[in-house]
View 1: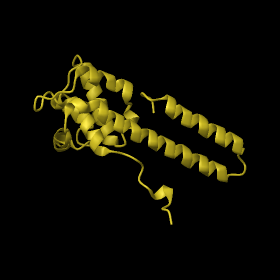
View 2 (view 1 turned 60 degrees about the vertical axis):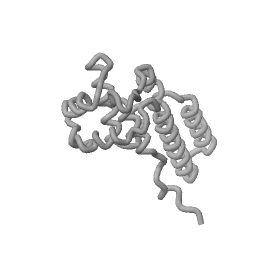
View 3 (view 1 turned 135 degrees about the vertical axis):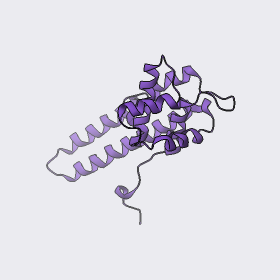
Length: 167
């Protein structure tokens, strides 16, 4: 018998999230470096809400705030400082977790690939939520089924149109 869909863990790839964050904080490692134009394109590929982890959302906010504050530049120390400023440094795991994130990065030049994995998982979570919500509404006979189906279709189209930011 198939498992109840509500008991399944929503799609996420925490290693891809960590790698994407780590790429943005690495200044240089083994001669590999995230290319600045790729880092700039992250804004076109990802939104904060695409991250499944609340901690990773906070770290991404800190990275972007740090880059804005430091003329487009950042590293792990500047991100840690930004997290302190936001009052979130310990909540995200402090130095130990930031070091773990940096150690997770296989190749910093793949930042956009990691971002695409994160975005794919985010779109899957959104689709699952639309299906779940629509199924619950379909059980309610007081709702017009055509309206339920049309709203689900429009929401799914929104996911497909929105290949960039703005989950």
